[in-house]
Length: 163
Image (cartoon, rainbow, N blue to C red):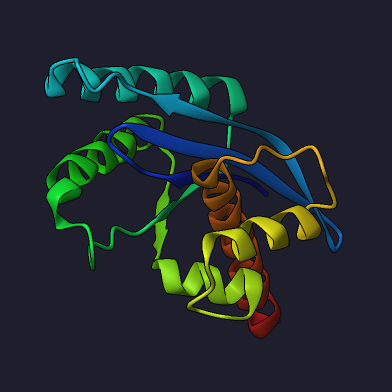
């Protein structure tokens, strides 16, 4: 299964493709979509849509796993991030791809064993699980890879319980 993990955002969208062969997780590719804060919001959303659509076409994932929106401390960007998540889901739906969401605490728990883990812990475990020191140090990308890992782990558990 080829999972495209996404950390949706308004100014930055992290993405990463992870596969599992037997029990080995592997990062296939990753990147960051950034928009200019000085640009009109509608143009920023159009840019996220266009660039994410290009990622989908290039990477050909089987599924998109996104971090569910959570706005405990930072409610000022909630609407912009929700709009960006909407255009990301639209791009996936137009390609016939399912989109699943995981709460940040579930992603952290799955990847680190601690649902309240901090970003450096998540980044360190993503690097360890994917057995790569070449992964980017950008939190948005590490979070996207973590979401993809989370989906692969949860789908594996679901598959094991149905056997």
